[in-house]
Amino acid sequence: MWSRGLLFSGTLLYSSLSIADMCEASVLSLEPITSVNTYDVFATSTYPLRQQFNVRTAISEGCDVIVVLDLENERAALTNAHRAEMRFDWYSTQGQIQSNKWILQLDSDNTDAIVEFRFVGGQWLEAGVYKNRLRASLFQANSSMEMDQLTLNVDAAVLPSARIQFYGLSQRHYNLDLGSLKSNKIIDYDPRLWVESTAPYALSVDSLYDGKLRHQSQNPKWDLAYQMLIANEAISFDGTQRRWSRSHSTDGTPLSIQIIVGDTKRKAGGKYSDTVHIYIAPSLSLAPQ
Image (cartoon, rainbow, N blue to C red; front, side, top):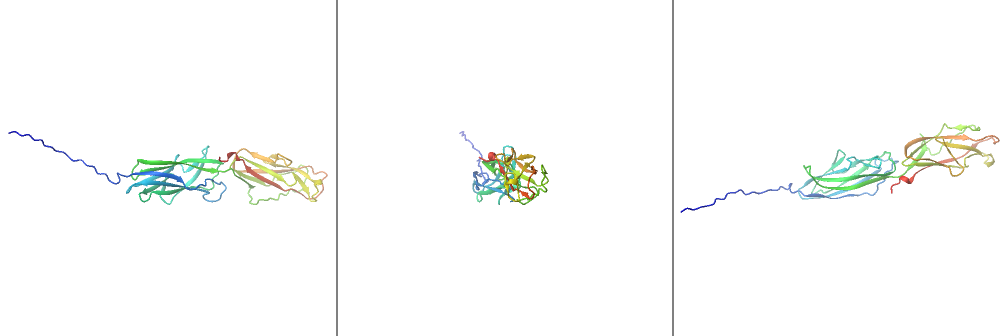
């Protein structure tokens, strides 16, 4: 009798997934914590502006991830429409800096972190808005494959602001001795003004005696007219033309002051004086909207 049989042979295939292979993680949120976003160019502090951001992740148990925080242009700075940079230093109690990026190591027990932009003091910046895009990119530890990413638009503002002082001096008041008064005498040796403005600006003047030197007797009969020039441009004291303006910002410009004495004929002998106040105001045309 013949019999036939079938011999079956085979190999049982099986798979084994390690916990690392099953890593699941995502960036849940990337949000600002602080609401202040104004940078003061005249501030004397090390960091006039600080902005904080909270990054939150969801990470499966036993999973280790890297979150890379950086900006779209890979610079530690925000930029305005003219590509001027408002620089900052990265800071966080977690992680470390690497090539203008902040690197966080997170896991299922440590899923959140706060990072900070510390904008460096002493930067001269024009008024306006400075922007960039903050990215939070999540990678599995020891892998270059990006698992998730969130972005956030970040901005900071420089307001129109200006200040004026006497060049090289700290006092706000200056006594200018005109010496012996003679017709058409020019006094131009001191002082000079020093102006700084983050926007186009204008100077205005106000004279106690409307552009006249008044006699010590306080009798207007002896008033002696004079002319004042700032950077060789005349300033009128008698009405509307009391402004001297510039259509650009400046990080520091010295401006000369000249006084030209009027006709001293038939004026009483004695001492003459006037008090002039000089003001500076930035244009609001560059104010952030």
